[in-house]
Image 1 (cartoon, rainbow, N blue to C red):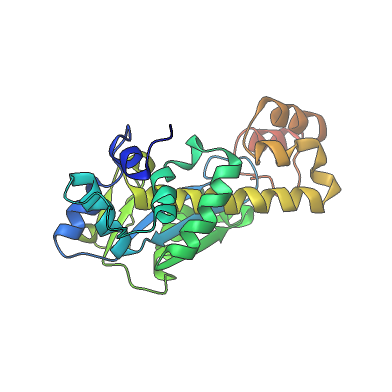
Image 2: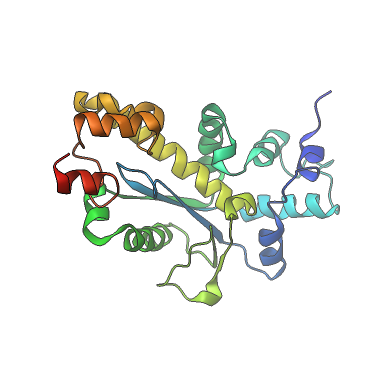
Length: 246
């Protein structure tokens, strides 16, 4: 027999509500999770997503977690609760499940934003500055001002340290960061796939499969055909290939 959403939530291997529960207990409701996808890819954009989950839902989840509520009064619809239960690091989810959860997160969140930084900008100012810019812009573009920010290890220099917590492997420890990772992953994967389908010059690199990361097949294609216009010229092995004219 399948576990109820409440039991599944309580028995999760990794508790994703600790940081949110602590902030909610302090009266902080608008908690923004931020994460990026594509920082280490050899081609295409860096994508950063930020999301503020519904604080009403988070409070109920926190109560269920600490045992003070079991949802017998249907404080949160079972279908909604079941989706929250499945939110985790995007890398641990199937593409189909990520798609479903991304739609749910965007529809149920108070606000979300997506920031895209292309390969030309990455080559121009460097991936570190681009990541800073992406995180800050994603937060700034939220329709609701975040009271506090949770990031996956990354410190946003333009935002006061007292207003953020930078959590190592945060997409495994915070439901807000995990939600942001799902939105970012789905958006970037879809974007790369559309780019791949829209330009026959991208076919050899199999971007539809590797999403522009440095897989064995991708590297082999690079050495055979050379880089294309969306490859990051500042990243190895593309940089060395260009300097030696491969």
